[in-house]
Length: 172
Image 1 (cartoon, helix red, strand yellow):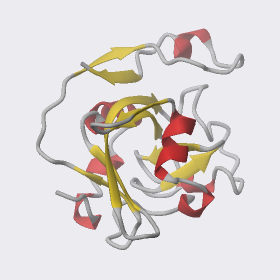
Image 2: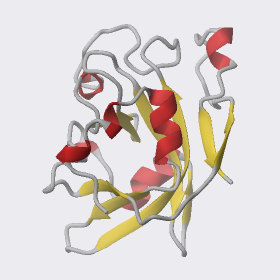
Image 3: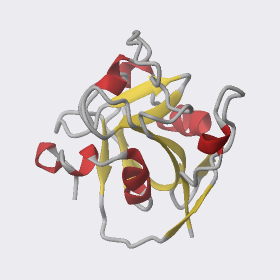
Image 4: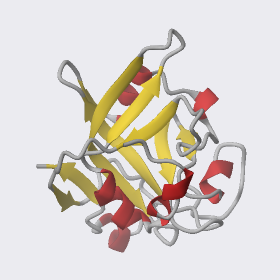
């Protein structure tokens, strides 16, 4: 089942709930030749708007961060990584897709994932729930459990209390 506009409320959850929810879903990409790739999401990181690690935490809207202040389900391509906007508009909650794969390939790392799926700046600001989008989320009914851990690779300016949050979700 492909998620569409009617599912916007699911994509409007707070980042920590949405990050868990995404585990096991399929990140799908239609390529320019018409073929499609489906990678199961196996790791995410959640960034709530009041978190010092959040992209867009300072509230400054730039070309790079503008999609973060849009509605849930919008893509933000930030430093060659895919962030999916969630939460309420004007509160830049977002989830980073850290890892996904299929039977033949596992993309460990958000930059490798974007390179493999051809996710680039053309996707910046795209709505995953638009039926014409070349990037979307599907649910094939497969149930996947996950565990929560501390996020990794955070910048030096992230506060200790935010570093300790268990907002990295990994499939078991």
